[in-house]
Image (cartoon, rainbow, N blue to C red):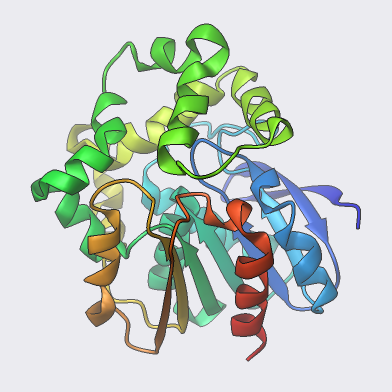
Length: 290
């Protein structure tokens, strides 16, 4: 099944999207360091199940535009998701998110639960469980070292050096049992070669985790990102993701008020949806159609 592409304007951003299928909207949001093609296997499966499946390149990830104000903190990603639902002509949607896309997914459910039917989150604990651990838990700090490193002014140079060896090594550390296909890594590196993408991607971390880089006008909304989730949720995680993350995932159950289904996959890492699509994709479809 071939992907179509479209461009929609939402929350002041021109989003370039992959889309396929017709029916209820499922919005699929990617993370770092990645692009919309991370859903190359899920989108056709969703379309075959009767959904309109759309995966945008996130703000600042070319060919999606960068925001005019240069801001990237996570509450803006959540606002993007909510605005995309309307821009794509839907009253409500299901949202699937991986990594930063999962942060956006949790945030969209917190900001506009009336627009969100169900959510699926991959490889990320609820912000209410994860962010506190990042500040105090040694294993989580070890596993999230890059969030701190990216605050440094030379991080762009480190990420870009030697044809983005950093990104390839990051994937290998995050999914240590995954033999990364060459075409996937080539696609990701091509995205990061586009002007401005490296800085935009690092600014997700700089603007979310460093208080001095946040917009004070967004503080109340930013705090809502950690509020309990009030829509049905499927959360999937692998055992070989980075240190500390699985313990936060296991400690988040109290942050869901309308049902949480959790599954842990032995041997899978951070990119579990690419590592075992034949297991992950049917589980997502089962949840969204039940």
